[in-house]
Structures are given as structure tokens and as C-alpha cells.
Image (cartoon, rainbow, N blue to C red; front, side, top):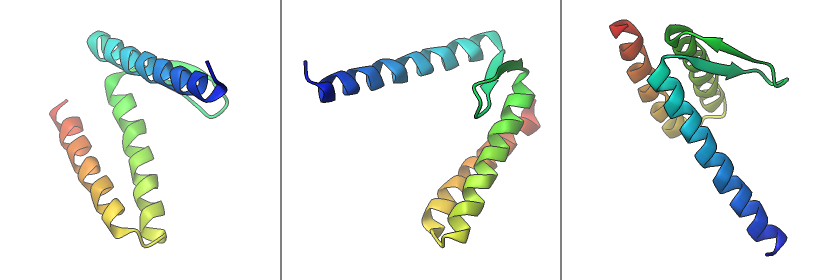
Length: 89
């Protein structure tokens, strides 16, 4: 197996593990967030959604600053869906 094939396999396994982890979090209504230093903590669903909202707003601002308005529009739609989800809680 070449290094490139090994790298692709590792990425696939990692992606599947993350997806499985997120699925388990949703089932248990417990969410784990990590910062850039690798510190992790368990938060409630509303706290998790708040973190996601903050992240999306930063990404949207970056796209607007870079004048990538199509991408900013996509992110804005995601923000709207997330805000609706938060309102329902």
C-alpha cells in the first residue's frame, strides 16, 4: 500500500469515526466541543448550537470580507436554519 493510499484510508476512517461520534452525541443529547488546543468538554444542545452559530457567523463574515458573496449566501441560509432550530428548543 502506498503512502497516498494509506493517507486516503486514514482520512476515510477518521471521517467515519467523526460522523459516528456526532450521531451518538445527537442520540444522547450530549455534545463534545474541542478548542484549538485539543481541550474537550461536554455541553448541552443549546450551548453546542450556540458554538455552531458563532462559527458560521465568523465564516460568513470572512466570505463577505473576501467578496465571495455566493458562499456567504450559503452560510447565511445555514445560519437561518440553525436559528430556527434554536428557537424551537
